[in-house]
Image (cartoon, rainbow, N blue to C red; front, side, top):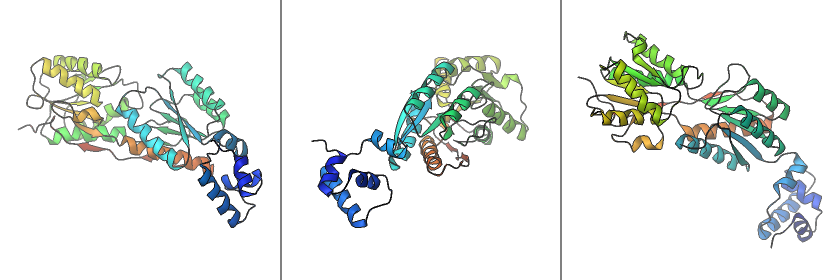
Length: 335
C-alpha cells in the first residue's frame, strides 16, 4: 500500500501542514512531534512526492547534466561522480545528450527549464552566448565540467590541459626521446585541442628540442579512427619518430593498431603515451602509459560545487584537479 502525507498526518494526529514543515526542515513544531512524525514515516515507508515537495519549497531536487556524447568511459566516470554527489544531497540527475549540436542543446535546455531543474552541469563543450543567455533566464546556477569559458563568469572543474600535455611530453623526453611527434585533436578546439598542442610545444622548447610542422598531426577529433589515420600521417611525415604523444587514449590505441599493421613494435620500435586513462588503456596490448584525468573525482567535485551554489546562491570558485602519469608498458627508455 502506498501511503500519503494525509495518512502520516492522521496517524500522528497532526495537520498535513505540520508533516510538510517537518519534511522540508521548516519550524513550527516541537521536537516530540518531529520525532513522532519521523517514526511514523519510517514505519509506513512513506516516500514524499518530489513534485509536491517542490511546490512547497520551490525546489525539484533535480539537476540537469548536458553531455555532447554518451558513450565511453569518460562520460561514465564523470556521471558516476555527479550522481554520487547528487545522491548524498538527496537530489536526482537528468542527463541530456546534445551531440554537440546547437539546436539540440537549446531543445534540451528548454526541456530542463520545463522540468524546473535546480541547477545545470554543462560538460566538454564551448559555452556559447545563446546557451548562457538562456540559462540566465532560467535563473539557476551552472557549473562547467571538463571545459571552461574565457568569456562568461562560470565556475568550472577540470584539469589543466596545457600542464598535463606538458607532463606527457616531458615524460617522453626524460625517457631519452628527442624525435617526438604528437597526434592531436583540432587546433581550433579551445578546450582539449589547442591547450594540449601548446603544452606539447612548450615542453619541447624548454628542453631545447626543435619543433616544426612535421612534429604534429592534427586530426578532426579524438577517437580511435583519428589515431589510426593520424599514425599513418606521422610515419609518413616524420619517419625518424621514436615516441608519440596522442591527445587521447582512443587515439593512442588507434596509433598502436596502425603500428601493429606495419610490423612496428610498441614500445621497442616506437613509444606511445596517451591522455585520459580510460578503462581500455589498461586492456590494450601493450597496456598504455597515459595521463590520468580523475574523471569520477571531477564529476563529484562539480556536483558538490553546484549543490553548494544551489543552497547558498553564491558563485563558487573554479577548481583545477591534479593530473598524473600512469606508467604501464607502451613507453620504453631510449638508450
